[in-house]
Length: 362
Image (cartoon, rainbow, N blue to C red; front, side, top):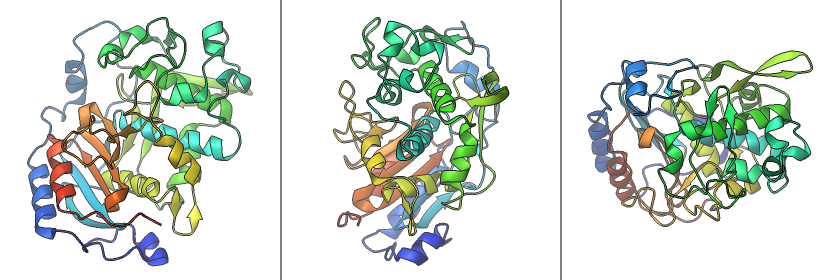
């Protein structure tokens, strides 16, 4: 098997990846996932247009990447034990990008620049946080999607994202923290606020502080829109998007995504380096008060409401209804990274049943 995470494994000695694993069942689950590709993704413009029935504000303003079929990996104890498709091929991450955005917020937190329950306006002078509602929005509200902010950003109004009413937890006109909505415009506002706070392009920060330390490839990209820029001291700094609703977002391969998952699984540690604080990992996986199966831009399966057939110990980044998935299960020291695959709950269930839970990760 390919030792994708070999540096971490050699430094710490994570154990035998096959201990307590039904190897045949895992291999079978990988083969079956390869046979469940999401149709239509080879023409991403047509695929994306078909996802939304409302044509208002449908214009794509960020770049698109045509999909090339199902791919992914299963990682146990820091080593790949199964793969399918081409896990080195970049694909659009869709809303899995949101969970990576939370890692950049963690950098700001660990550097003492971001206090979760402090209003964003304390250190960010953007007009979106200047009125009474905006001044009450905290970083936690932004990251757990309970800001309830209404407005327009990069030409896209919040109401144009039909996802907002899908869960039935939106509180239109309510104060921050009293309602929850999965809204790409508000996530883009989070990316804008973090860019203003850190005063650098977020992909540069992610590369320096996360991707380089964990040995990721140099092939990943994080796009914004054609006109999403922020002026910082006279320099036009690009602002990324937190999803692919209108194009853009994170383009990353399954292996690099698995590395991110393994970093989170290990409490922010990579080898002997604490890349992100364990405290931030705990915060990311703390349930939102008004949406208990959601943390800081990560989905939590504690009550088995995200993936009912999968273990309650799992956390995940997911996009496009789960066709893009990063699953992290500390109880099994398990990471699953799946791209453009259908029936992902079947994959999660089959692999999880084939892996015996172990003692808590040290």
